[in-house]
Structure formats: structure tokens, C-alpha cells
Image 1: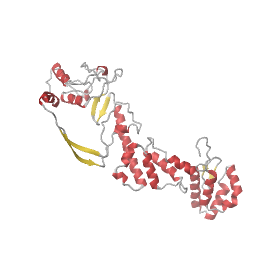
Image 2: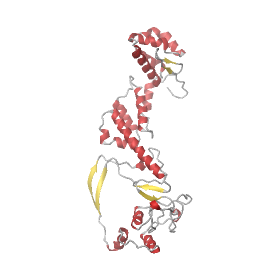
Image 3: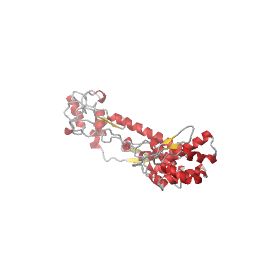
Image 4: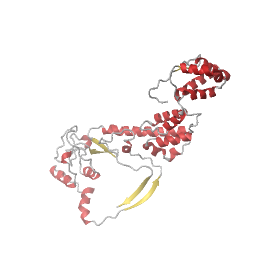
Length: 361
């Protein structure tokens, strides 16, 4: 039945009499609940098989159309066993082709960012309504459909050998539920990190300038000043400059006497953005009376680059890990409502299977 503009009947359950259906429409779920309630009553009260349908016909239906149906077919219905009676009940009061309609609905019922266990339980519960119909689904059918309809970030986990090798449908769905929760917890952690004013995260630890950058040398601009444009985030080369020349990721000054965790200034003005260079580090050392770190990799590399010939790069494949379980958290943003417009960045990593390289330059 269509759920729009539908007045469902109310199911009432009693301890001393069979369950009753108040006036209204019947859908597959309500029919299954009514059937289960009847079976529980028969078992609890020890009703004999030949008397079960009679007990239901005498007290269960309060809808005028159902009462009329019973009155017109009482002799035929009373002669049926309860299983056959419920088949007649379905045929009379459920929509024609309801099982085909439900089957079609389940085949396009995608996860769509819902928590896996919530979605799976909903799917599995509805699939059970098809039991006893030509469209009944086996556990293999359900597993195949669940895999094809789940969100992409979980498909990669389902492909792992230790998950794929699980035979039981329940154990398999439980394992995916754990995977889904761990991913959501991890992404929630990164979402909380991005709320730290003006910071962005790379590789889980390094802080990059996410606010305002300029090269004036003034580090007293408030970090909460959002009126200025943001500069690009620091490159790996710029971070190396700052690391080797006593720099600060926040104010992005060299030989300034503090690091990001103790910086009280703000970020530079992005409208005056210029890439950090080794010359900036040398100039800052002279300006602040500091000793320039001439032994740093960046300084020594610059001084010797003129004397070097062509570099030869070589790499060999070490091994292939076919069960690597690394997931790029940033790639999951769309799947679980992560705010991709924020300044939180997570470095890309290879997902399974990954190639591990050893290189020599």
C-alpha cells in the first residue's frame, strides 16, 4: 500500500482474548504484527489448531468491511488452518502485487549516509515481510543487496579478506557495523579539530597557517580577525624552512623566539601572500640578531645545488599488502556529512591494496 493518505488500522493486544484490528487499512507490516500476536495468544492459551481461526473470526475484526467479509465467507474460512487463513487475509486486504512492490523498493533502498546498523535493521526487517511469498529473499540475496546498496566508504571495508570471509549474515553485518562506527568516530574527531580557530590539520599532527598571512613581521594580529582573506596553506617546503630556522607555523616568522603552541599573534594577511623562502629566513636572522642555521638541509642544499649534476632516481617495489585498511578521512566527508568547505585537511593516503616503495635519489 502507498503510505501517503493512508489511515492504518490500530492493532490492540489483550491477554484474555485474541488481538483485534480497529477500522482502517492494512499494510504488510501490520498484517505480520497481527499474525504474530495471534500465534502468541494461541500458544499462551493452548488454543487447539482446529479452533484457532474460529477464535479470530469471532472477536478480532472491528472494521465493517472485514466483518462483512467474514459473514459472507464464514463457513469457508472456519474450515481453514491458521496459515491458510492468513494467506486469504493477505489476498483480501493487502494491495495486489504488494510483495513485488516491496521487493522493488528494497532493491533501491540505499544507505544514504544513515548509520549502517540502523539502515541494515530497517532493510532486514522489511525483507522478512516477504517470507512465504514468491519474492522471499534468502540470506545470500540479502547480503548481496546490502553490499550493492551500502555507502562507498563501507564497500572498501567489506572487501577486506577478514570481512569477506565471514559466512554468517549476522556476524558479517555486525562487523560492518563496528567498521562504520569507528569511521564516524574518527571523522567526528577531525570535525572537532577543525573548530579550533584558524588551524588546519595535515597528516594528523602538523599545523598549517589557515588564517591570514603577510610578510610585514607583525605577529600581533588577532587570530579571530576574519575580515582578511586566507592565504594558501603551508607547503611541505615552507614547513621545513620554519622547522629548521626556528619559525612559527602561526605567525610564519623566522627566528621569532616561539613556536605555534605559544604564539599569541595571528595569521598573516592573505592579500599580501608570498611564498616563504630561504632568503626570508636569512633576512630574519640578520634582523633579529640570530645565528643563521647554515647547516640546515635547506641551506646546505641551496649552496651545493650549483655543483651537482643530474640526479638519478631509482625505486623498487618492496611488497604489496592486499589487506591494508587505511582510509582517507577527508574522502569520507561526503559520505557522512563532513564539512569539506572547512580548513581541515587530511593528507591523502593509499587505500588497500597499497604499494610500498623504497626510493633512492
